[in-house]
Length: 313
Image (cartoon, rainbow, N blue to C red; front, side, top):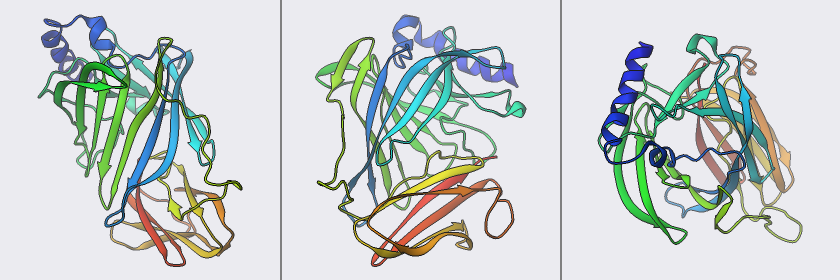
């Protein structure tokens, strides 16, 4: 099976290499040490207008050799706002095939899974998934377009993929010379992420985010429920929310059928930013959660919001 996946990954490389050099194709995802990206998230829950929800950065912090014998780039993910939360993950690019692999602590999967093929041509189907989520037992991503476009005043090629492994799926775009510039997913609302600043190979693009404040006291100006992170998760994930004034807060988790799984918060809380952890191995019902889609709902006074989370074991 591994050879079959590798062959499928190499096929687009052989086709694309006829017109572009390997170096140019690899430049769609420049993972050199020191490269740094900042993104702005927009969350939209119909019929409400979109709102700026959070800001995060990704930095190539270094290199490491992991227990499967491969060398990986250390990627540091930092939530710039609201809580400066950070964690690390590991990726590598096979320069001969253009396949991007992400390391996971799961020996049954060979410690890694394929997340992308940088050499894919428009219309190519790749047996991969950036989120490693599947509702059918297999991963499938399609390169849906390659076109000229501009960003930060620079004209370059944009390569867009759609991960169809699960519903609603994720659409994301690489820009040659910059890396990932956008991603979006919609179900019961939309989550959109856009690149606002990049430092790539010692060259700066866009405007860097240095601080985010709501007011003089740094208190939230609105009620907001943020997307959990990491997502997908196993076994723990963090849920964050903001309150603009004191309210009685209820935060609950439900399964796909709407059955209540657990109550994470049921208390009076002051205005501020809050963080709660969900552990799939230790719910109030004293039963472990199985892999699948779940929903978490925040109720605070007249405010109510629902978001989806994915448990993958």
